[in-house]
Length: 231
Image (tube, rainbow, N blue to C red; front, side, top):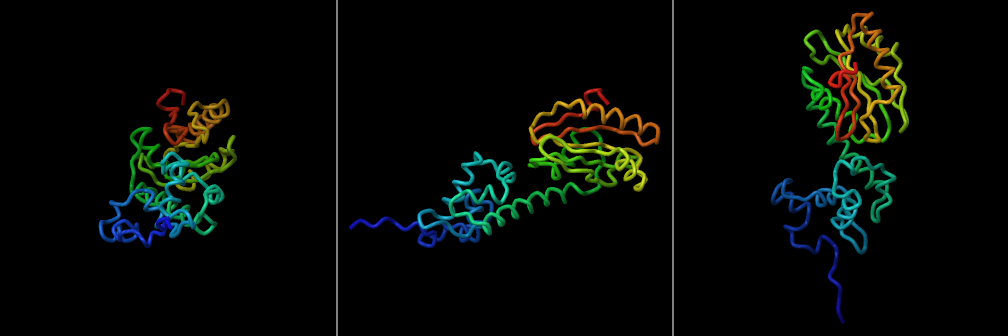
């Protein structure tokens, strides 16, 4: 009688098991699927943890950025992924995001719109809703602080100029950069974006707190009002 080979990872050669492979060859030797398999720990009666991980990655076209956008409920739609395993995956990806944020938190001088984009990326990458942030600078254009102003739905969020200038005045900032994201990926400013930018610029000039730029952030690109001459 033919017996189907066991799919249990414990029956594999030691160097092929993700945990043992990491110990023997180092973390860099593992594939994305193997690293995720370590996080989830076990598979199903018919699938190894690596198989489950490969199916999860296939569903997001093997794009870790897309994987980071998935919620606990999204991950639980996959066979072999319960709430605990989904939470583990989400937590690991969040730690990776925070690592990027910590690296960006060093004393940073803004010299161009790309500096703004790279600095704020850890806060806005992978979001499915809009958020509005400000970056406060000193006279040397060195970042003093970043502040979250509001978070909204997919279609938009509210930015109150009074709150923005209050925060800037409290920090004795010399200038302000406005940033908000478009989850749709469309970098074109809306009529509301243009109107807000105009209002903020006028108020900033009056208070001697100039608005240096307003950046519309998407995961792959951005729109800079300053670069486009629309500020």
